[in-house]
Image (cartoon, rainbow, N blue to C red; front, top):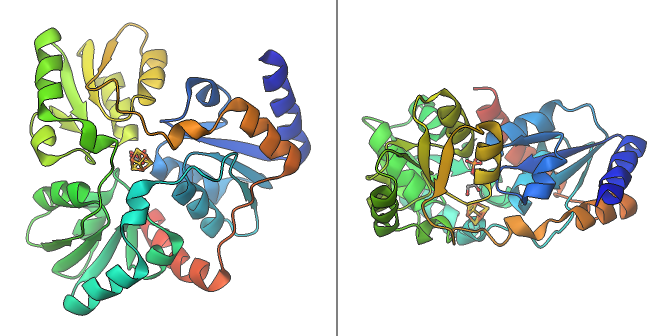
Length: 300
Ligand code: 13P
Ligand code: SF4
């Protein structure tokens, strides 16, 4: 194991590579991160890094976003099969239909989407800034894609705008049902309940706080509470426990595991650096249009 980590470190140095890791990755992959964070933090890092190579430990839309923001850099995915099913739930054809049915609406696109869909959108958002981005949009109508649950939650936080939602959702967060929260609350009555806005509305309503993964990390650190029930992908519990050794964290649902996030392993990170594979590419005409929507978000 140490040998593996040593080799990764050596190769990283040789290629001037940086390892960007999402909060849902395996514990061992989190441990070797140069930057560990949420979708927004990872895009910000991709924009400002001086490295030549970005090894992206997350899912495909995240690596694609990094490549769009930093087109001159080599962006590698240790396992290119790590997709996001939610991102597949809308395509350009469906988006164009929504646009022609709602010609006065602006399109706000969750980063969990393909580059081609981003290219047809006005502005991107992540779960950390979705409400802020929607409030900033000048138009009164918003087509929010692809997550219907995040879109619905954001619509409760933004006044005087009409939301048109599509039908996407995250299969991992959709597994977390209100019964799981009620059960966990029975076992840990003092615990604060924190859930991700990708959860179902009936689950969200039972939470003390609805937060992106970066929001959860901040909340747990700053809260005077000592126990927390966490309604999101369970990978984040490793970091929460590591950062807050005196506090207790319980998963709302132990089975809330994103199989795609778990495809990346230390071995695959090493092979990725050895072979400079798999390189993420985005056709220039799509990347140029998608970059406008991503940069608008990052400038806020
Ligand atoms: P965050 O932006 O909160 O890290 O979430 C990304 C994601 O894919 C949630 O399922
Ligand atoms: Fe996609 Fe859900 Fe996995 Fe996040 S947790 S990457 S939204 S499938």
